[in-house]
Length: 162
Image (cartoon, rainbow, N blue to C red):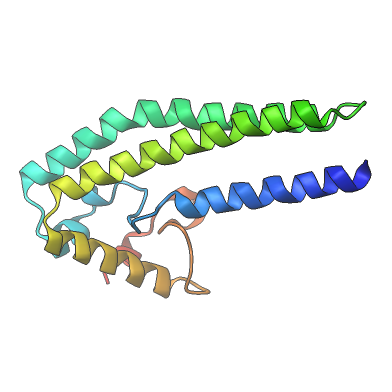
């Protein structure tokens, strides 16, 4: 029984890490990068593009909050079912399926948001944005990371001015 729970916890942890990796499948930062003057200048964003990006963000933000909450609740439910005695593998599997479905919906929403962003940017701007992100990641200690955020969840402006 103990081995099952340890294995289950390991699988759950890997899924959470994998989900975070897929959160940015097209390599675009998650923060409000279109508000950074250096990025606006480097990409050559027009005021109309900046407005469209802001509109996309505002439209998607509510849905993302709800979907993230659903994933968190499903994760809590999964942990609770796995910790009950007697252990019921059928209930754990069902809870795990609900958790996976919640993650899929969240990832699909993130992807749709990225598609909307891509529709606003020209191909050249899209490539420049991805290059900026690569430079930000490379400049970080260790050279890797999922987002250009420093301490406190705020992206440092110096990192974006490269």
